[in-house]
Image 1 (cartoon, rainbow, N blue to C red):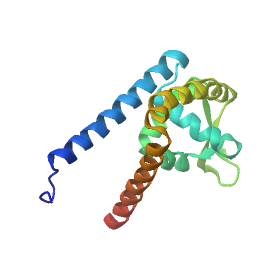
Image 2 (image 1 turned 120 degrees about the horizontal axis):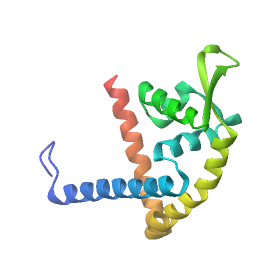
Image 3 (image 1 turned 60 degrees about the horizontal axis):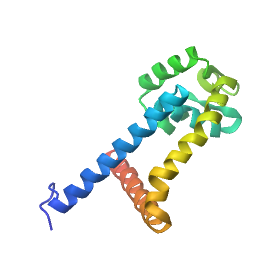
Length: 158
């Protein structure tokens, strides 16, 4: 077994391959979203979350949790999206102005409806089809286990 805090050469190679794959895939998909639809990968992430939320709206706090963004990053990005007409901020009808909501606009809805199928097709071609059903199932399980380990680690840090 490798020394605590050090990775074996095989472990390091696997980790680096994963990181390289993740970055390359994310940037490749982002480049096409920007080129074909004028959306950044961050725009797309926000629009996906809002389009899947009941009524196309979420409290800003919940959107921050869903995207795992810091409050200031979310606020600045939402301001840019608001200027482009993709989202709007409004008072939460249940909690008033103290807890703002973010809502997808018709322009934002049209943007996600036009970009999501093309993005999904690229995800299929570059990830789903490359892995195939058996390896995809293993990858899914492994991803869920890593996510659970991270959540447990966060709880231990508190």
